[in-house]
Length: 128
Image 1 (cartoon, helix red, strand yellow):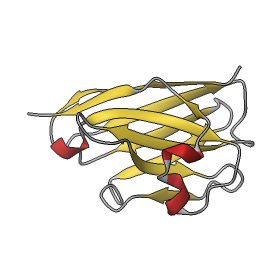
Image 2: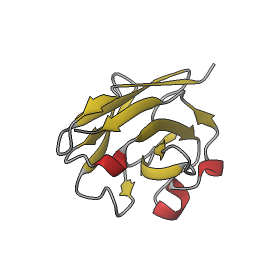
Image 3: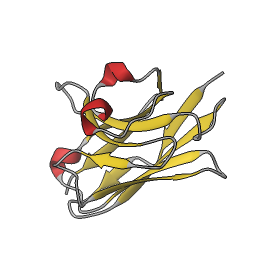
Image 4: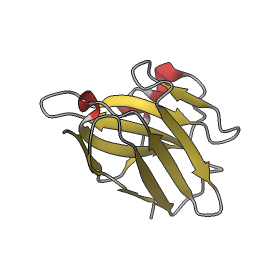
């Protein structure tokens, strides 16, 4: 059974950092591309970043470019989202999601309906 489990969320002050993890079971990162999404209270789910299954191509939305970095560890079957210089507007529940297709274009990465499998989410709160 395919499963994704996020962890690493918490409360952090503006300017701080967090690293989210997405632990994957039931499939490997060689076969699935992974996306990171977030959903703030009262807002729609927003695609943040993704990493392609075959060549590790990464994409980011403009608001996180230069601050967030997505990476993967095939030996641990885990994808990470390193978040630096966090801002209050980054506050949201963060989700990882998986799809079997290749994702090399941002326009696909940011569409929730593209993804087939989702984790339960982890809450990130940026506040002083």
